[in-house]
Length: 168
Image 1 (cartoon, one colour):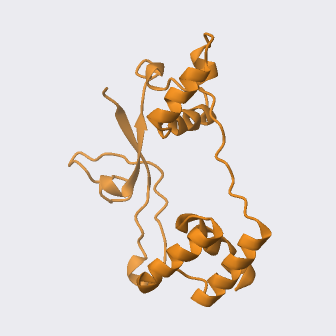
Image 2 (cartoon, helix red, strand yellow; image 1 turned 180 degrees about the vertical axis):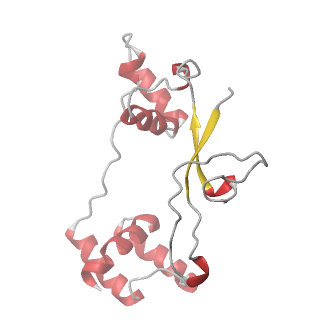
């Protein structure tokens, strides 16, 4: 696909050496007989803002099959589903359904903690200084703590990062 381009206003900062910002006001590149210098301001063509012009005959709608950003996000989430989850869903679908109905995606389940889990995590995070960085020596202790209260290390780390501004 061949597209033509037009060079618009000059973006050269003439006061850069002074630590300021000033442009000359040239509104459009006018090519000189010598080549790449502008007749109006004397600047090189590369200082002018480039605008690509595409004719309406060059635009193909086949490249954009999605109708909305929401639809694109739904399809992206579907890619991350494991093959096992897909097989389970297919087994549940006994009747014929359209591909559009099969493409609906469930939202990610929000983690919910009990009051005891939150209190235990709060106390342990305060003991760690509300950070898990540079805690390689305590990795086993953190794993044992997480197993003891019934949350994964990843969920504990996320909870600490999300709640340190409230409790710390």
